Each structure stands twice: as structure tokens, then as C-alpha cells.
Length: 110
Length: 113
Image (cartoon, rainbow over all chains, first blue to last red; front, side, top):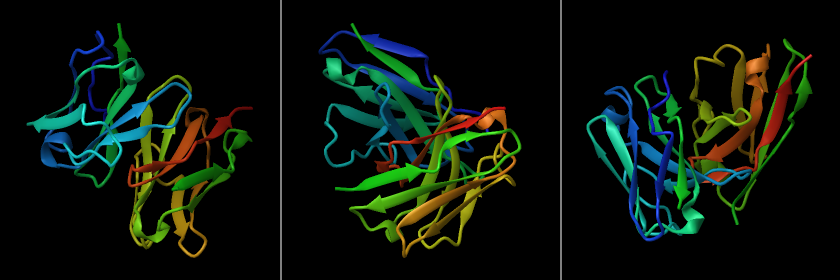
């Protein structure tokens, strides 16, 4: 199972909105709504930000939103803040009853 | 507060074995599907294995199939990962997680001679 494709890096200024894409196939992202997004700060464990494409766990800011179109899922961060600078990973269930993560995106706040 | 604590990591020679444990507290462990995810130094997250809530269904990444075994003991609120025939490329921090919502702090496994 190949990793889902994410841009290596995305940057934005404070207050701006950025979108991170996550491209897979009809056997993973396109075939299931079990797509999640994780935020990871250096040296820390990942944190769930979005599950089932567009749902936010309790406690996650509503500045984070998720969507999906075809084989591509997206994470949008609105009102970018310095604390949003981190690595972000998407993850999808697959037709093999396994899961696959994305390649990861480093978000930089300028 | 929900907490997951991994243990059992360390240095092992190629071809060796190691068993990781993950002890849960603060939530109903027996209600959650559990996963192991790993991260090689400086690299991205890689899904390793999953087990359903009662332990009857498991799945594995191709890279660890037939070498790793996931299991759980709901009476002890503990998840396990038995790792055999370890290779250098298995070197990573191993995280346990509950349905993606709760994560442990990770335990480092180093495979080297």
C-alpha cells in the first residue's frame, strides 16, 4: 500500500487560510469516509484533528475543517496562528482492511 | 483523563524479538479498536496493525505481516505487539492509539548489531 500523497510543505501568514491536500485512490480515500487528519508538533505524539472526513473531536478549534472530493481529501486551517506550525498527516481506511497515512505536510507560519 | 503508556522498547539485534505493551487508563479500553503506528527517526507516520474491541479481528501492514502479532487483554486494559524477525528498517518510535483519538507517548525500538 503506497502512502497517500501530500504536499511536502505549505506556508501562510497569521490570519490567512491554508489548505492541505491528500490524494489517494478509489481503494482508499475515494472509497471510504474513514479519512482522518493528525497534527504533530516536534517531539510530540500526533493529535487527532479531523475524523470521518469532516468531523472535529471535542476540543479541536473550529478553525480546522475537512472535506473530500473524489480521491482527494483536504484539511483547511482558517485564521492561521503561530501554534498551528506543525506537521500534518492524513490517514485513510483501505479496501484491504488496513490503513494508510499520507506523506506528511510541514506547515510554516510566516 | 485518558492515558496510554507504551513500554518494552529498546535495542535488539537483527533477527531478534521484542514485545511491546500499551496500558490504558481513563477510558473504556474494551470499547475501542486499537492500533499500532510507527515513525522512523525524521520520517512520517506509518500504520502497522489494528485489532478490534474484543480481539477477534486483526489486520497488518504488508511490511510486518507474518512477523508481528497484535493482541489485547481487556481484563488488564493492555494492548500488545509481538515483533519477531526484526530488521533494521523496523527501527522507529512505536505508538499505540485508541481509534485515533488517544495516543501514547511512544516507545523507541532500535534494531542494530
